[in-house]
Amino acid sequence: MLTARLATPSLALLVALPLVALGCAGGDDASDDTDSSESDVKKKVKPKGGNGAFDLQKPAWSTDGFVGQHQFGGSNLAPGGRVERVPGTYSLSVGGQSLGSTEGRAIAQSVGGYTLGAGTILQEKASGLRVRFAEPLTLGRAHVSMSANASGFSGAADGYLVPDGAWRSRPEGASMFVLPGTFRVRSSAEGVDRTAVVAAGQLGEVVLPIARVNVAGDAYDPTYPTTTSCTPPSVAVGAPSFQQSFLVRRADGTIDPTTYVVPQGVAAPATLNTYGLLTVIPTAAGATHTFTLNRLEVDDVEVNTAGGGTAIVKGTFTIQSKVGAELSMLGCTFPTHTGVDLPDGTYVVTTTASSASGAVRHVEEISFP
Picture (cartoon, rainbow, N blue to C red):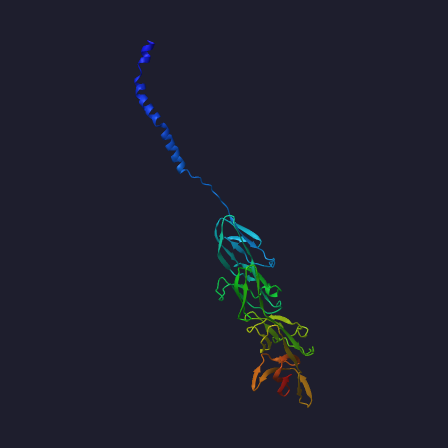
């Protein structure tokens, strides 16, 4: 029984044998082809990342007084600081912000083309511009326009300094960060451009001219006071629309002894106003200009009385400036027994008063000096 089972193979085994044999015959070649194909298509990717950096170096002249915000790639950057960015091309900008509550606005500038690669560091020193008067002003104002446009002023991107800003009275004026380039600065007192060329890392400066103005006058007799019924003489200085003035005499009657430092320019003469009579002095850069005033005192009027005597009565007087044959009336009627301050020139003084017999009139021509 055991021998009969071994001599008779099953149908399933007979069918399977040729298939196994076929597989064994080509087994090694098939395995080699598969390995070779996988080796050919495999790639290895090794990702790398890295930033570049931009350093804005702080020059020795830079102090806390400099204003104007730098931005690199849209991020704020202070001198001495660094901004990191992924590789790419970026721009650097500065300005466009307020210089302070009453100072003005910094010039808006931007320049592109800063290319950062992974691991690279670009460095650039900050540049600056300073605008100041040759001496701190003590009176008078001027509007100052600033532009980074080499050919002139272009509008919205331009900066400015306000006439009332504290910058005009500081020795260092206004100090701001800029990008390298050519700058134009124009004071409304001059009406002309002044130019500064600023190199990278350097501080450019524009110095605006000044003049000095004062007054000299005769002694004051308090028994002949200046009338308070008329606008007292004054001197105005500064650019058009931004003038300031000071009174010739103080409340105690003394001449103002101050020598004022004022903005200088062809558009900003010094003007003495004596009751509407204007005396204009064109200023010169660095020069001191003095207005000389003369004191005219007019007594009360002596009139004849009906009994043959005289009496002193109150009256009024007017003053006309005489230039050649032309007369110009000063804009005030003054009470007698007062004094007035007048610049050099010729004047016609007409005094009137009432007497018992009617009005009396006295005309006299005087000249100073």
